[in-house]
Image (cartoon, rainbow, N blue to C red; front, top):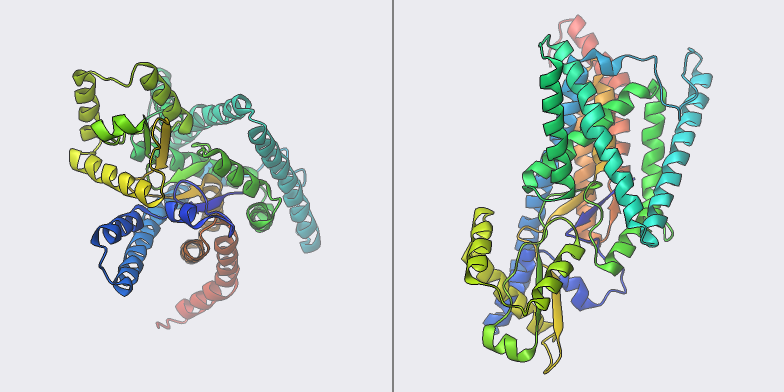
Length: 463
């Protein structure tokens, strides 16, 4: 259902050229290579040691940056389940789950849960296949309309229902006019943050909230045993979709790599922000003016950078001092000082020299290099949703032992997934390990640990 990726794109296959693989490394490794080029006489063993230290620091940094949003999403779901009874009340179910498990027979519950999970899996597989086909044949308007309408419903309709239940649970008064103004502002800011431009922190907050909201919807409208069956089946589907040669998510990632495009921002959580270096000049201009300084690219994908490059080149490539000063002020407000610009310009120049990609005389060249200030790990929102479903469902039974056990199990599984990601350098499914650990910890804690603790407590035995 989703995947975890280092950097802007997933790692390539083993047939990828070494230069391309090196380009996809983190910014810290790029700085190390620049230092190696300048130093020239540095011993090879020292370079390897330093690179390993930077890799360790880089990996640990992004593990923490990924654990924080996952923890926040699960915490929102657990807090909502614990304080609002609306999401634990049954009686209404999704149309994809025709069997409502209204029996006590174990065999009947088992086949009904598996049947519901199979239907859900079929729906997810068909929708994923349609998404991949639409992307492969460049039906971008259809995809954006689909995602836009989904986000619109989540940020307006379901956010209204959520806020109404929160107000009821805490007995807080609010008139409908104020409620409409709040929902309108909340929804519009969310749509702008996800689909246009906004601070990265704001976009991440909205993606976390959307994931938590979807998890709460599934917890409410899925039968009890169907929820556990869906988690197990979706993990297997995720394994197939990402790793199989003809898996739909693998095809989606590889197609995005071939086109050098970013996957849709409403489906991916990124711990870093992507910037592009776009320079169009001939040899004489580069010798006179030097390389073009990096400018910020919004989260609208690579097309936005190309359009800006075309507009600037059609205008003669000349910008007034006032425009330059205004752009520099915007970069400074965003935290990009002149020092940062100079360092990235030097790094891009060194990479171009090492790759032998220097512009030839009389030939117009275009350098498009994804150079991130903080190259991020990307995690699909589906992972956030199903992690939160597991922990939220465990908390709905009121047992904090199982809730904490599932929480720890998911983080352990996510950590192992990131370790494998660093080793294999390719897109990996983020659900199987975490969900397997979560299900195992849940049933073991519920059937063994909790009864054992209750027995010790009843006999006043403290360990």
